[in-house]
Length: 421
Picture 1 (cartoon, rainbow, N blue to C red):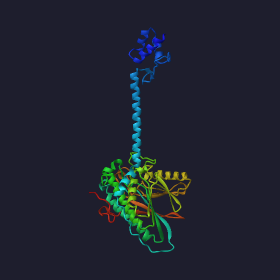
Picture 2 (tube, helix red, strand yellow; picture 1 turned 90 degrees about the vertical axis):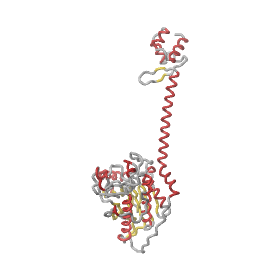
Picture 3 (cartoon, helix red, strand yellow; picture 1 turned 120 degrees about the vertical axis):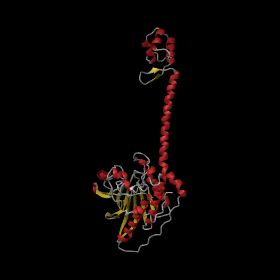
Picture 4 (cartoon, one colour; picture 1 turned 45 degrees about the horizontal axis):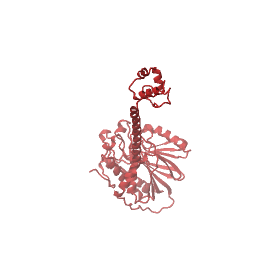
């Protein structure tokens, strides 16, 4: 076949108006030869060169230049859309990472810091046992509303009741320190904040909350925690606050376990606002680990702090929690002495592998609609207080019962926190 005929055949293939059989008949050659030319099996080096475009559902076919351009433009547009989607995801992730610090930065100029309370004076005594006092603080769910009619009158809970129970917690702590444990000298308090201070946005809680607005919830709870810590600071030379996030404060539907989880959690926001309130109280130090857990040295003993939400809540999760505690200890070569968690809404203690012990904290509410109707569980609202000795580790334990009788009829006595309009 002559060179000019090959060029004309290729031009007809590019025009894509005639079938390969019709082109073959026009030049008196077989359809198979035209097919070989179209697939560059023959005469591939003769201009114009054909570009094979893969079309779904069949063999590669040669399209005319306009169709090829349309196909390429479509591919470019798809790539552009994928790129824009990735950029939006990156921007969203960046905003989410910075959400807490951004809000706190904007709020700092308008928050009026609390003044330090008048230090509590004690008589000088000799021969006292020196220990560090530790409070496990978690699962206050301070913005949650529990109507007694929904839980067979086992609980009545809302924000003012939570405020009153925080007052009771501090009253009992100071009574224990200053009136009962008179043979001890507690210069330092470690405040283990183990998360779930709010019921958060998940499962539609924000709309059903006491204030009906998550941002207002966060501000009110932060103010409450700040007032509690301010009162305690008058009775200790030093307060070390650790902020561990829970599962309810997350802004995503599912749990997140990477470093992005902490700065995008309402528990972190609440504690950072509390830190702003307390910036003028010099003996309180806040610690914000970048992960979901932290190992804290108290009197030479290692305490592993974690909310505990890797497994489903409720008492049935105790066995799973014990297994987790048992696996954490060997991972740290036996250097974890105590495994501390909240989440289960029930205080308790259990042994773990390697001689470690698991300490679980209670909650500020006895039960709620989900715990009672789904898990069929309720327990006395408690927060765990204990002491740590440099030679003996965790010594005494005191589960403080924060509910007193009909506290739903007793308004807050000392803490002045924002109320609903």
